[in-house]
Image 1 (tube, one colour):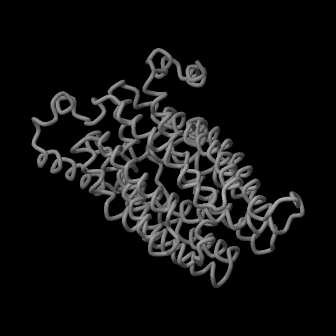
Image 2: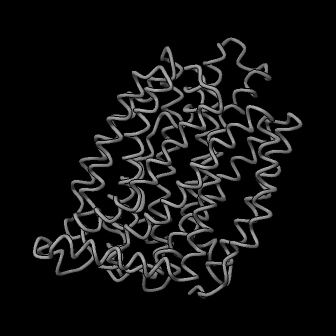
Image 3: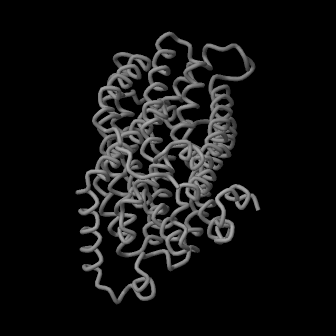
Length: 433
């Protein structure tokens, strides 16, 4: 009964039936979804197939552009046709992507695989959070959304930790990085059936629609959803929150995988594991680093609510973490520039931890400003803006890395974010309970 213990200091929360089967289904989803065995090696896989950093950045940008195009329509469809159906379509698209990646050897076939991956992302992002928030709404537990989401999300990070170890074993015993895509198919098939088992009542937010959604004309549902989105975007506070949280996520997503070439450089420079080949050494070191990283971030995500409670408002905690993120990016760049890659790896790990403390708080802030009937759509607006930023950042960062190196690029990024911060700083509005 670990979850009860974690929530015990919140008074009557123990009496409100948080610890149930659906909590474990939400947690299992995150665990299975993050068994992406390719994550610790995706950049190295692209480099192995002959791509340059600029081409890698173009691939990432292409993925984000497709996500951007589909983001809001996918959220509207999820709210209108059913969130579970949207999630199942997402998992099917992921599986197709993994199959193509396994056979892919060129930039153009990578693009084809990225397309299906982007479809999977577009129909997933925001939708599962909406399922969780709808469940909490039905249980009258929305006041605990940061704590609850942080707990379920901690299982995602635990999945990533387990994935890192298994991915290292796959790469160690396989002739190339591409086999990580083949093995990633298995947990996604399991995830597909898990989503199918979710309660039908979570598909829609209106109780009457839930009983018999076909009675409400689909055009009316779409019209109402779009109206709710427009109302949300017009608000000054919600608009600034969208920009702040989207920018933070976009920066993190654009740079997080560049930990991999840093690890590769570190492997080349150290003399340990001399009996192994370079590929075997990188599989051992990468899986070890990523296991530690995700194990810690799993705990960090669970502590997100406690972290937020150290501040007077949700907004002040997000402002503090944004500034701290800039400082971490700055020091990562400095240590890369002077070739102290061990310290770069350590700060990368701390940066990951910070982002996992921040994300549940960001979801809490945004969800408080969204109507329940458009929750998936509203969160998709945030995801769309994030993907637009990633689509812009990724090729620019790739170009700068090819020309200036990793260290100088991170220093320039820290300077850019410092100049931008005064314009996206959140105003304190909501006191924490």
